[in-house]
Length: 365
Image (tube, rainbow, N blue to C red; front, side, top):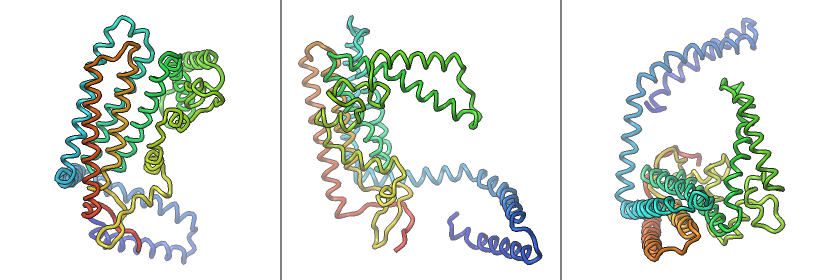
């Protein structure tokens, strides 16, 4: 039911409550007492409405699914070829790495190779995150897809930081840094759990986590407790490195502007609200649902980062020379990626001439 359909009874209800409120004030009722009574009345009146809405839950889900399906039809007609290529890059990257990982995991030295296992973990996350980007694009949520592409970029940067320093203890430091993060998260949870009604970790669990945290910090020294404390040895005079410092060192800062753009979708910034505006039919709308434009940036950032992570995981996943067939497959996937990037760019250029569908509410003039 739309706001317009609800409007008549809402206006009548609000007018009735206001009249009762003003009449009670004229008769000398306490404003504080009236405010309490109003809250209680709203609570009791809300129960049958909530029950009625719950009875319509299945219909609401059906309507939402129907709207998303219609959006997907529009998206497929416009972006279908590019999305096919995205899926092909994702599938070929996964298949290649799964085969590489199975071969490498069976080698005698793999169990003691921190770099291999760290890179494998990062690649697994990259494959999953790229799939999330794809799902969000298919559903018509490019802004959400960009936030996941942002994560993919971070995974690629970390993969190269680990891989290009595989002959140092950086991978081991990365593994040990989990002890710092675990204790930090556990401590925060212990503070909030009582108010939330959640069970606390036992004193023994907290003590064990603290011992692991302290041991890791003592083992690795100054700066290790920072967010990127595992990366301190990569810098001569920086005990508190940031992701931006790693990007600069690795020559991967080109995607920084897209990452900062995605930050506005992750955080509740004022500029994020501005980015949520779209022009259509001589009006401005605040986006509230799926759209069929703006797919190129999140798709391209995600594709680049996925192949970067794959390359780091395969090239640096083993101290041995890369096999000729592996090099060939990497080049093949890179070429497929280029085709996908071009496909998204071409459709985006056409998009500027033919704006897509938008679900939203009209903004003020």
